[in-house]
Image 1 (cartoon, rainbow, N blue to C red):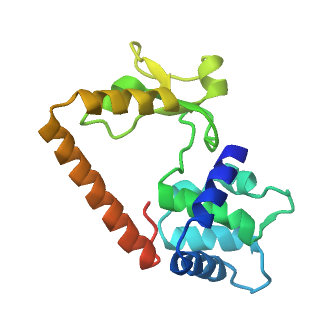
Image 2: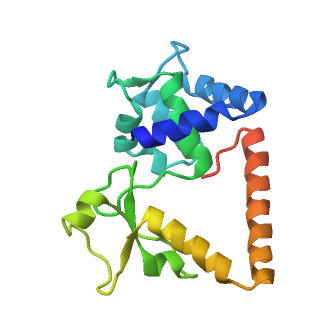
Length: 186
């Protein structure tokens, strides 16, 4: 989880002042009793209101609560804000824990157009063979899949690459507008 925290802090530090205000506004929206801390009840109510059911998993709240005091301060919710904006809310398909670090995905599902899931599992479940997926599954860690995706994109004809880049730019623009409006991307 420390790597996610570091990424979240770096992300937050590079936000515009307006987006930092949006993050603070989101925190204040969650903090119903105004005590400067988000308890589990406030956290769940806020996320359920926004239909962020993946984020309501108890293992995520526990992972966010760095000091283990049962509540989240603003610095701890910066990590939640980052997870919400980046789409990084992944839960192990086998043991149902939040995937904070390196994880494995089924490469066939990852590269398949009609797959609803890329079947992510934690290192412990993968290493301990504690998962059930199709028999010929080939798993790769998230960094390998990113590298493979880039290699495949670079091998594509130039016009195809341009089309993909245009779609990515459009997604980034839509995401930026949604963030500016205070909407979650999930």
